[in-house]
Image (tube, rainbow, N blue to C red):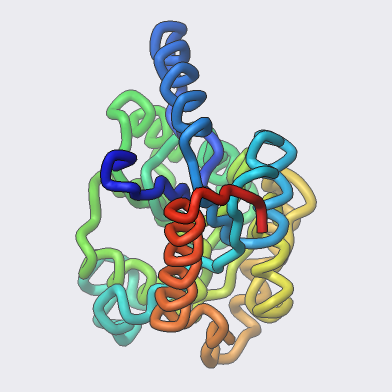
Length: 279
């Protein structure tokens, strides 16, 4: 790449790997990532808050080209939203009642154990929690053990294709995000792209996203999930009329693609002119 006078760009969705590593893996990662940071020409953060976390963590990136370009919405990336009755039938969920969900690869850092416990403590008949995504078999079994014989908790420990993702999110009334720590969340943006209200801890860049869409769409959690705020969220979903459309016009994929290409072009021109400096 350098021989061709190219550039290395990092879109900093995460600052560290999701999965835990053993000592050997951690040493390999640190060696690789240190070399990677030394070679980065342009860093794209998804929000200003995320950029500040990035610079606090890796201050050497102050001297690199940087840009803030938001994550695009998913409205044109997945099949269109399904009617709720058809979506619930497709996913084997009850035709009536309130369904909340969590989606994505199941990891302990996502706080799913606490979510199941809180839900079982506060849920009423006719309410369901669906947790879906790939999982380590041992962890999936741990979640099933927490759910026990409670038919209100559904563990779908498998990869979902795009149509199944559309069906699950269309079937649900709301989304819960209970990560221990998070910088950005594609799954939260996915929920908003399908016009599903969200309950989430506003860590990392999520406060900026919540401010953009407003309190009708994102309900903040002050800490790890507890029965009381989860009960309040369920009640709010039941009082809520059929939602309109979440205000995501600022996250138009075409406009964001053009902005991204512009920053690539500027960084490439700078590299080829021999100038490397922060914006």
